[in-house]
Length: 232
View 1 (cartoon, rainbow, N blue to C red):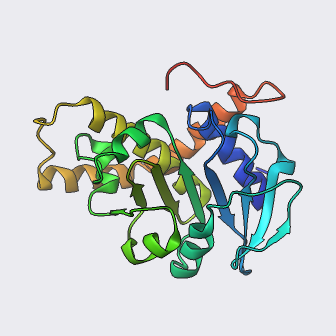
View 2: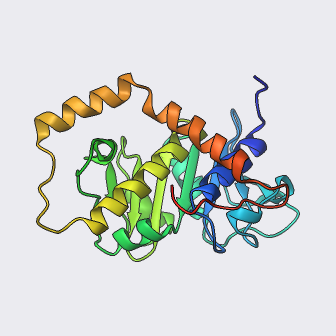
């Protein structure tokens, strides 16, 4: 298998997320850290995920300075280089305003543990009042993988782009469950939660989901843009 550049990895993730319906509007970012350098690749701001091309992936440094870009980047991306500085273990970040993620964010709390996949986020989700790093930094714990921004959307982070993207579509699924299930629905008992979390790790769920995201992105791309499926 040919190894993709960091710029190509960002585009691959963006198209996969778009296939899931997570990129129909302007806004949202996917970034990947450049190994061994205080730099990262991130998508431009003037197109949807569905429209993004390789030329729309910019290179920035950890001060937010643009190094390479054919268009303009989002003014709200300080949390990317902020997280990379604070968490050396993080090598990729995904932020979207997906419908279910945004709806769930209005609760101002982590997703409820209502399904085996939601175990990824139990005790590993922080709440930040805004997407500015001055708010995210103090809230983000050393082992958190998700950030909920009330009335805004969500961020997922990972050791690579595969984990960050897979966690994001999984969080979107968890958010849909949280929003549509009644408030009285019981959450998973701790013993069962720990057992199911272990099963998912052994099954390499995140790797398998990343493969699925990539397949969906390829299948949904018509040569000009991604056409999202009606249901995912």
